[in-house]
Length: 317
Ligand code: SAM
Image 1 (cartoon, rainbow, N blue to C red):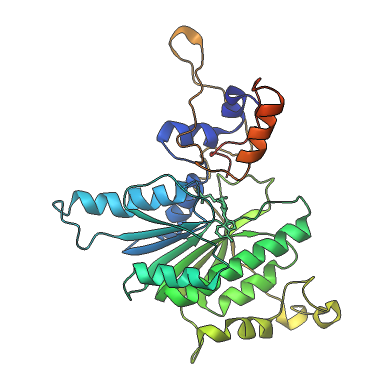
Image 2: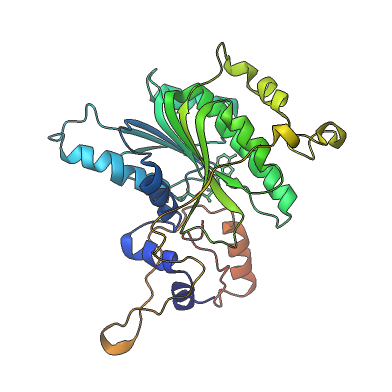
């Protein structure tokens, strides 16, 4: 798809470039905030799976930059934002970047060290594995990423804090909801207007972190297993009838963002410009070391550099 055509078919892709966001997913976090006010009072935030960095930009613009403007140039007391990803990210003002794997136990230690013993008010995770297109498989791998994020949450989030995580809706959604409800008094699954209806993605918005009494971080998986394990990782017989009948759960599901605003599944006409020719903007910040870089270089080399294009840009997430 050409850039202008993509601008037409994906209004959030175009708006992201116009407003200086590295990825269209910035709108998802902003729309979640419009509904849930997640940034209110936040002094310390963690952005898990942050590259190319549009959620970190949203955190910086909403937390760090306004505080910096009113702090007379003094650094003390400014909000602290730590962003982690497997991939390196270009710098963002007010964001400490850590290159690492959130499934690695040491990652939580690195975050804690940056907070100097204090805990975070907000943890967000937009993590996604490379999608295979096999829904069961993708949902399972995604749930493992959320559990890794939850492990970090149990180490770094303060009691009363908030956690937002991308989920893939599927047959284990109720299980995930029950697992999250062990730790948060309020859990809502939200679908921002900028997230396409055709996508199985949604976001778990978890409020008021309140782990069970006597909870120890090392017991996390043991506790989660008492609720259940994702299908495919367990003997299916154990699960038959699970969460049915009196145990059936109803998950609060909420659309968020301006519902009369832009529809991510619609095409919009391109704005008219002087001279009548529309000029598509370049991505705000192309990834500095994308995982597909080697493939791109190999393709370029084999076609002698003649217009090789993966169609992938930093605005896709
Ligand atoms: N929120 C980001 C933004 O607004 O720019 C987009 C995130 S992108 C959809 C998903 C990210 O998850 C990728 O950058 C990927 O490298 C990261 N990721 C996947 N598995 C990870 C892991 N185990 N540890 C750290 N990052 C991971």
